[in-house]
Amino acid sequence: MALITVKDLSLGYEHRTIAEGISFTVNAGDYLCIVGENGSGKTTLMNTLLGLRAPIAGQIITGDGLKRNEIGYLPQQTVVQKDFPASVYEIVLSGCQGRCGFRPFYTKSEKLLAHQNMERMGIEDLAHRCYRELSGGQQQRVLLARALCATRKVLLLDEPVSGLDPVVTEQLYKLIKELNEEGITIIMITHDINAALRYSSQILRIGGDAA
Amino acid sequence: MIDKLMMSLQFPFVRYALIVGVLIALCSSLLGVTLVLKRFSFIGDGLSHVAFGAMSIAEVLELTNNMLIVLPTTILCAILLLRSGKNAKIKGDAAVAMISVGALAFGYLLMNIFSTSSNLTGDVCSTLFGSTSILTLTQAEVWICAILSVVVVVIYILFYNKIFAVTFDEDFAKATGIQADLYNLMIAVVIAVIIVLAMNLVGSLLISALVIFPALSTMRIFRSFRSVTICSAILSVFCALSGLVVSIAAGTPVGSTIVAADVLMFFICQIIGAVKGGIRV
Image (tube, rainbow over all chains, first blue to last red; front, side, top):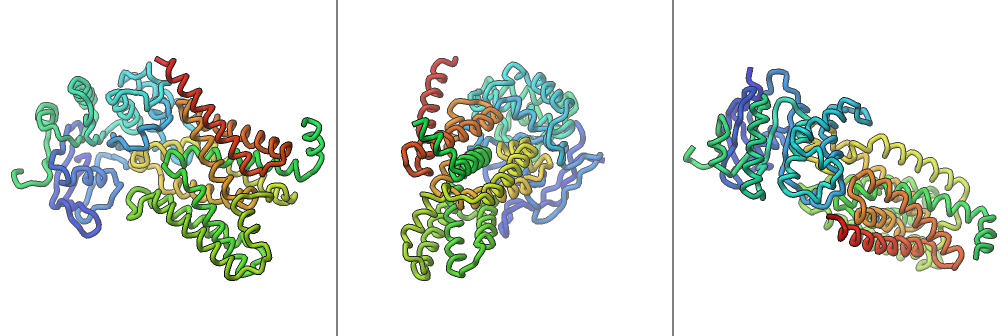
């Protein structure tokens, strides 16, 4: 069974529909890129996949025992985060929060997981640095490490390379590809068609007629 | 001056003022970090004005226990303001400003039309600036304050990690299955309780300063959430204590002296932060 099956999904705000008739499946190990014009509903689709927004019509079925809190997410940066006083370790560890439920504190194994994921992303040496002082590429690695703490299966990325220079962009794409090769399913929104063609196994285009 | 202080400490009302001042400073600074980071710095001010408006309604209705109206109204407003978030039609800061000014004007209007008090301006002044109220506390009020402070601190410690996750990235928190709305609700209720409590004791000017200053000051210097939280609590208590001591010794108004101490501390932290930032590589 597919990891995520989307059937005839309509997206939108209140009474305005942005996109409709979206159907696709994601299997374990896939690398799906979602491309489309600005305003075509890419981010709305992702928010719906994450359960942050209810779909207008259609359904999203998760299979293979994928639970809601097993989806890792790399959001676009928010204004709040720009001057947030938090160390890298604190942020990465907060990725484990989803598995805590009502338990107030982190367990040893969760702390270990945070360290492992920082190592995986090559940011172990930044653990006690302040997030807001890092470069854009380093910040994305921190958020990736946090997302990896939340999931072992699926990673959703919302334009992970926006605002990064070409060299760092390339590094980040390679990193994501490596994660994919390790068996993590990737769903990524991007503007970068070339990267989508080069790295992904499937491309989903939203909006427009030339699909 | 020391003699004067020692002598003052023999009066129970001075001891009560010190205890309550420190406890409120502690509680408000803990939540202040979250509120400042969530861009809700002004919520202390807004909610205390709401509490003021509700108080005047209670006064007009001649209720013996005005808490029955004040607390629910303030909690309701806190929930409305904090939950509206980014999808609201009126954005956070505008909503806070609107409710704040509206409630203040409405409250003053009501008091003016219906009040039986001979010294209306004095009443309003003491509610807003807490000119003397912290020095007229009863033992029961001190106990209520102490119990609620313990509750707030315990809640904060137990939910510290969740508050961090929700403050840093609400969407991520929701997406990974954290009940962000629940915790936002909890933060709103707790902050409303603190503000109503503090409003009665120290006035509305002081409470909004207590919420924002310690957090802003420590954010100049410290670079992790935990150090900012712990140090803003320490700084807040220190400023409240020194403000109280100075105001007793010099006979200045309590609330504004504490705020002045907080402002001074902010500038000191700003300078330390600038120097440290200059040296850091």
